[in-house]
Image 1 (cartoon, each protein chain N blue to C red):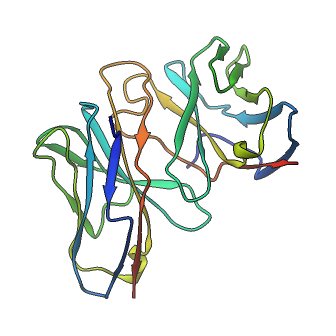
Image 2: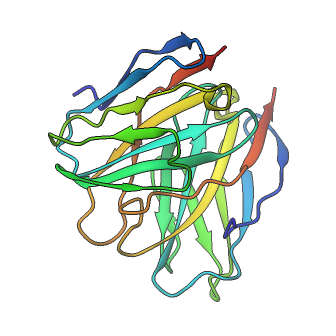
Length: 114
Length: 114
């Protein structure tokens, strides 16, 4: 069973910030939150991950609530190339993309509108 | 640095035929994975390996076999192809000791069994 809940689809205007929510109410203390995206027909691409603190890299920002039961991925200035399926995944410290892999749900299909 | 390379990109098999999907990575990653993705669905883990000589089953291993004789290569074998194995197959790798890590994915092999 998926450990995360995401909206099926979202629209965002080009140039605006895209905010993708994810609920993970059963997350345990040693589980990280990962975000990957999959552009049509390509392999998934890593975006960002976090444990407790908010994180930012060149692609996105990750905001994790204090109770860690939900998070939001923020693409600050969405472009048409950001149209993709975005997967929110929780995975524990010692596998974290390691031994038992990553469990992918259906993700959120983000459509950037011109 | 090519990352994760999968061959072939496309293949059509007849029911009962066998084939090997090739996967190689040049990042010296210890962990490697095989996933399959059916239309409109997330990825499901078939097999994974934590290092040369060590493999283990994932969520959907039936009908597949793997081997890991070197760090670089992780081939997936289909012995008796069935229509239910029509899917897109992704290979991935990660370096995992402890803690969070990102997984790198290949571009996929699109397999049709007729």
